[in-house]
Image 1 (spheres, protein in one colour):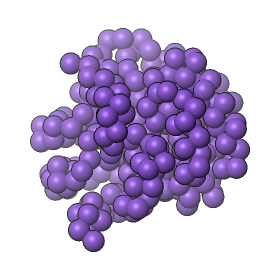
Image 2 (tube, rainbow, N blue to C red):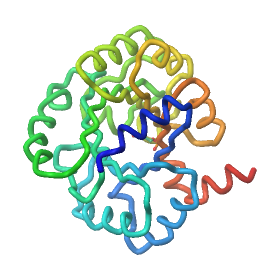
Image 3 (cartoon, protein in one colour):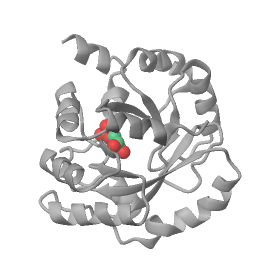
Length: 242
Ligand code: 1GP
């Protein structure tokens, strides 16, 4: 049943690229969900990620149940807080924000979440989460009260990713932040891929098909698209047909 990580590893080994659509429960209108799920089903997405920095409403369970009803893609929680847990999802990115030095986001939320997660069936995907400077303050930066790593400091990003891998993270996530002005630099993606072994997720500020392709060509295994799909649910149709 818990096959998410196995499938990501398989994709990496076989150079099959993965795509996650990120849905922020705070921005979803439940009345429009049927149409949205249709669009996800028509898209090339392989995963649905669910999360946001400030999820306050209680629609998480309902939202996931509705998605699971009409969509076969694995649903992976991408939590901004230890309260964002639902047993209806398939898995959870168990993040540690390694770019920052705020103990709450390095270990405190994880300690709070662990006993709750133990009582669920969720597949736990330990993830080294690394925030990269992207031309302006992002929600991750604001909420976590941490500084991103400079776009120029590839050495520090690499050392951070390697430390995460040595601590046992199964995934590395290079994050520019939702709605970022600039996506993660391609040279940085290349360096991380060449010098680490676990699958690499890249997201934040990727707004067109070329951006997705560039990330893949640089070695990203899974690209996350949030804002572009949120703004236009026909994003993938338009991009593929043009
Ligand atoms: C944010 O990486 C994701 O956590 C996606 O970012 O909303 O910019 O696509 P965007």
